[in-house]
Image 1 (tube, rainbow, N blue to C red):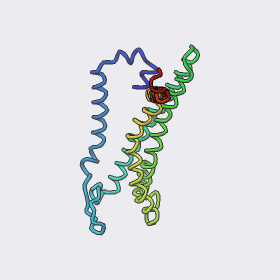
Image 2: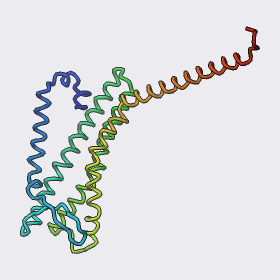
Image 3: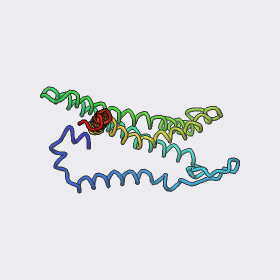
Image 4: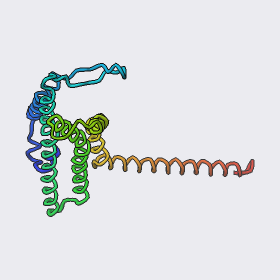
Length: 227
């Protein structure tokens, strides 16, 4: 949406709600379709030694390695490489468009804010999702016997780091709204306006208090019967 609004503003305004609904349905449909193996095989397992229930992928035991590799190679391109390529391409085209627009008198400050916002979104996606997909890829290489998983140290590192990488990946959905809020123009302008109003209210209150105190002092210093 931001790419279309900046690079193709006229075409963006012509889009109808029906077109937006269609695009959203297609995206969600593809997402659900690619997640079918996860929905089918995901289960819980009771770890009696820890007295907790853990979420696991209950693949068929005889083909566990193949299923694990297949789902990983499905997650890596659909969940990381393709989205990263799309948002990076949109950022490059947006930057190129804004640099050209500057030649026609556009504000450099507004351009820089937009570029910082888009670059921050790209970097947030990369930082949030890269550790998870790297660990999943290493896990797949282990099942393919490309790397040696007989070493308990390797498995311990992956098992320890994977929960943290999952938290980082899911946190990306929380980070983006904050980026749009704090880096976006509207938030900074409203914050500046709120600060100015608070300063004005404080000064007005201080001046009115000073006037009231001065009036009280004058009244107290006036002798009885003299006005």
